[in-house]
Length: 285
Image (cartoon, rainbow, N blue to C red; front, side, top):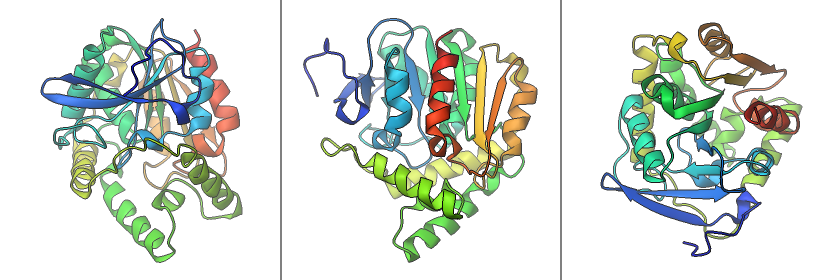
């Protein structure tokens, strides 16, 4: 942990890992960008820890915003046990946010993180100023409960080819997708020191169980989300089907939707050079 809390860290690859304890859980987190104002809290995806955020997304947002990434309960270097419901994950996220002393935040979320973000925003509308939902879908969304099957299949394919599973799960397997996948995985390796603790198999399986429950649960009333919302995805998302981004867009009043062509679950990473400025623009109002 760093003791120099006043210096501004401008590169996510160099952000020190900090901890805060609340509700019997010690949460690991990183901060980048200038302090002050409303922070942008990043909600990460399935089986991911602090090291899984693309610096080409974080760094542009952190130029003018206080960005906070964190490991929720039982994930990575955070203590405790991963809950088996999205609702409990959202409650833990609120505990973490309040432990840092914030009563208003912006949220940037991806995949599983987007499910947690939706639940948090519905339960605590007063806490969220602006909401970014990427590669995600609503409770009760068609085929979300099939995420586990897709994930297992792609992990097997990746193992057989000695690849990172994200290359299969996040990107199309055409030339463009393979190139984008290789570049993305390489960017995640830019941080060479103070790497996070890998997510345990037990934590991963519990997250999958929570996603399946979410997919089979009663649809939430997303018209209750009044925070300005930006939704983004690729046009060929095999993990959380792209049509669920359209579904979110229809159900969240006044939301904005971006669908990137010839891309999958990780469309925002493949198109980081155009998506990052769009996210910065959205969060700057």
